Image (spheres, rainbow, N blue to C red):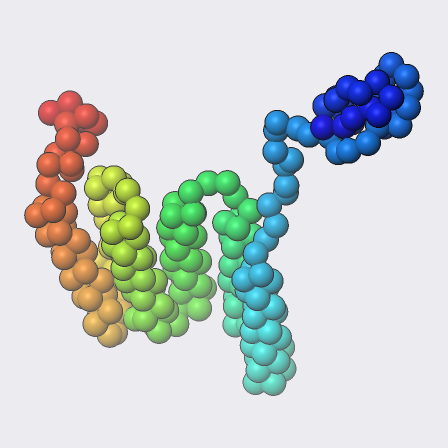
Length: 212
């Protein structure tokens, strides 16, 4: 509150002078509403940008030394650029961080699939895509112990994720299926866990949606 020493009144205002006697007010103005502060990107985002630039330079240099022009490093650059854009959205979005990270992981899978179709490198389907799927399922399982996640939403996310390894195996896109089988096994464990520990909640959600 600001105060006028001449009028002996207190005013909640941003004015510098008293509206009655025009003497200078002393003190600071007080507002019941908190000041809006623009959300700043955390330090980790700057680290991600720095590492992405470093990887882009290294891969570009190696690619140029081998082929005398840029080939596969361009796909790496596009993937890194997408990674930076998505991370910027996550750290500056007011949405739930859980949903943002899951969406980010699904976009990574999409980028890996596009990368495979452009390059036909088997290690992408053997290791990268299944590894991302495993990390998503482990992450959602871990976070469900500490936050209130609806069982049906939890199941839907993991069903969407496990489709990729199943299609890779059925379509014979992989040479080494170990990680694909591991991701499918994790999904089966998730279903068993939901049945034994969240059966009633899952049933209630299904009744509300499908009016069973």
